[in-house]
Image (cartoon, rainbow, N blue to C red):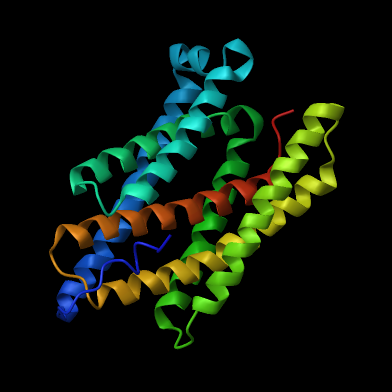
Length: 242
């Protein structure tokens, strides 16, 4: 399947101001998703009726929400060229809200200071790689290809590890550590790659619905990059509450 970044060719050459608007819109959608997720996570960890709803039934609601998250990402990815910008926004915001609810568990596991430290470290790494993606003259397509393959391999390894834990009832700490470290490295690199793709898209961006949706899709990719870096750093260096 072609990437949405490849599927919207345009003969339009925007002004520098139009390019900046497209980039600002993309990062604005990403920031909005982070805010929605933060509010949802706070609500899930602080409002008793939401907490009871989320963590009842041996965590079944969280499992169902996680499945819903994956489904929403796939739906948005596969249908982004066909749906309206309004539908794309609804799917995107819904995903950010659900993801925030599932992340609320971190407030019960990790100290608030560790969460804050992981967030600021993630912001620093994310910002640095965005800056690199904007400024580098190197074509990052090759790096993005290898990072995507590495991500697929990481997902497979993660699934196998989860299956082993469920069967043996024993967690292997060093495997979790390696998975988290690999996740940080992969998504840090993908941040630069995605940033460069957004920059290239801005050079052809017009006011059409296609590029309105592309801004949302670009924001989704950046959001996923940041969240995965944040959660992995938290697992690597976060101090638990016990």
